[in-house]
Amino acid sequence: MTKMADSGSSVEIVEGCRLPVLRKNQEHEDEWPLAEILSVKEVSGRKLYYVHYIDFNKRLDEWVTADRLDMKKLQFPKKEAKTPTKNGLPGSRPSSPEREVKRKVEPVPLVPQVPPAPPVPSLPTSTEASPAAVFPAARETNAFKSREDHEQISSLTTNGTARRLIPSQPGRKRKANCGPTDEMIKVLQYNKPQSASVFLPPPEDSQDSSDGIPSAPRMTGSLVSDRSHDDIVTRMKNIECIELGRHRLKPWYFSPYPQELTSLPILYLCEFCLKYLKSLKCLQRHLTKCNLRHPPGNEIYRKGTISFFEIDGRKNKNYSQNLCLLAKCFLDHKTLYYDTDPFLFYVMTEYDSKGFHIVGYFSKEKESTEDYNVACILTLPPYQRRGYGKLLIEFSYELSKVEGKTGTPEKPLSDLGLLSYRSYWSQTILEILMDLKPDNGERPQITINEISEITSVKKEDVISTLQYLNLINYYKGQYILTLSEDIVDGHERAMQKRHTRIDPKCLHFTPKDWSKRGKW
Image (tube, rainbow, N blue to C red; front, side):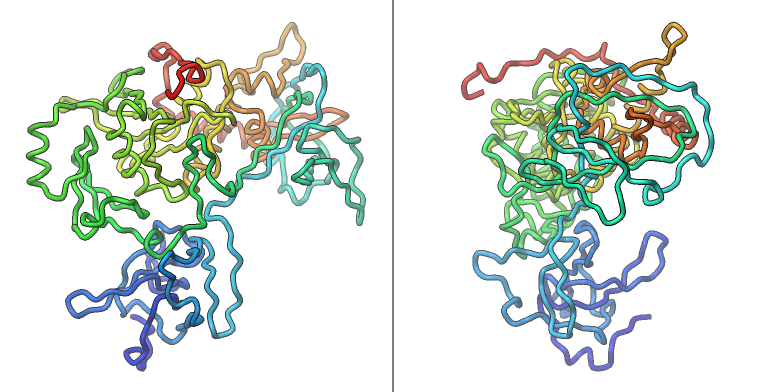
C-alpha cells in the first residue's frame, strides 16, 4: 500500500525533486528512503522515474512507477538546479546529493561515495629495528573493549618522526609534526594486555598513504575518476542487461558503450573477445568467425581449472578497451581511458570443455611511481562471494613478490574492494603472527618491515590493518600486538573457507623492466 496523496496526479514531478520512494530492504521489508529524481520518461502512456536513494550506493538506482512515490513529502529543487547546463553540472555524489530544496531541508555536504579506510600512521623511526618478542599464547575471551573505552597515550607523526610518549591530559592537545598534511594520529592502549602479545619495534621511516580522491588523474595512466565532470547522463545506468556466455548481468553503473546500443533490452558480448553486438543473431554470426577460446596474451598461471592471462594494453588494444567497457558497468569510482597502452591486464578464467571463461581481472600500470600493484580490480557478479576476489588480490601480491617489490592498490577503493582488501590483509598478517614459534626458548621476534617483506604488502597497509583489527598497542615502552581468542577463532574459521589459494609453483612469470622499453 502506497502513501501517494490524492492531489499527487496534479503535481508535476521534475528532475531534482526529492521524496520518499518505496523499496524492499535486504530482509524484503518495505521501507521509504528519501530519493532524488534524476530523470523522467514516458513508456506506453505511463510515466517512469529514475531515482537515486540518498545515502545509498548508486548501484541501487532504478526506474520506478508513480505508485511507489510518496507525494505528500515532495521537495522541489531550486530553479537554478532544475536542469543541467549543456556541459553538465557537477552531479551529486551517490552518498549525498548537492541539490538544495525549498522546504527547509538542510543541504547535505558533499562526501566521497566510499568511506576511506582509517588513516595510516607511521610508527617512530629507528636506525635499526629492534627484534620483537612474543608472550606465550594465553588466550582469553572478551579480552578487549571498544576503542572509545581505552586511554589515549600518545601521538605519532605521519612522516615517521617520533615524539615523546606521554599520557594525554584532559583539555590538552598535542600537535604532531606531520608536514603538509598536519594530521595527528593517536594510538589507544589497553590498561592490561590480557592475551598473547607480539612486541613490535618501530619500523624504519614510512610515508603516509592517503585514501582520498586525487584532485586530478595522474598523467601516467591512473584510472581514478575525476568526479568534477559528473552530469545527469553519467549518473544513470544506460545498459539494461548484458548477456555474457551463459550469464546475464544487470549493470550497476553507467558505461560509455555506443549510444545506439543503450536502447536495446539486451547487449550481447562475445565471452572470449568481449566484442559487443546488438542482437543474438549478430552474436551467433560472430562466433562462427571468432577463433578465440581464451583471452589473448600469455597464460602465466594454471592450477586445476583456474588460469591467469597477462594481456598488454598496447598489443591487445581492442580486447583491453572492451574489457574496460564491461568493467565500467560495475566500477563507479574509476574512469575509462581508451588509451590502454600504459596498462597490463591480468584476466582470471575458469576452464571447461568450451574454453576459458572470464571470472574477473585486475589491471596495473607498467610503471608506477607510487608502488601501485593494482589499478582496477573486479570479480564479475556471477562469480562473487566465492573467494575469487581474494584470489585476484593474492595473485597481485604474488606478482609483487616475483618483482621484489611491496605494492598497494590504487586509491580510492570501492566499498566492496575495501572490504576484500581489509579481509585479505587481515588474514595474511594474522597467518604470519600465529605461525611464529619460540626461538631457543625465547619469545619469537618479528618487525613491521619483516611482515611487509614476507607478504609484499606495503608497510602503511600493514599498520592500518593492525589498527583496524585493534591489535596494535603500547605497553611498557614497546609497541605490542595483542591477539585475543575471538580474533584467533575468527581467523581460523575464515581460513577454513579459503579452499582455493595461489600456488607460487604454478606461476610462470618474468617481470619486465618497462623503463628501458621506450614507449612500452
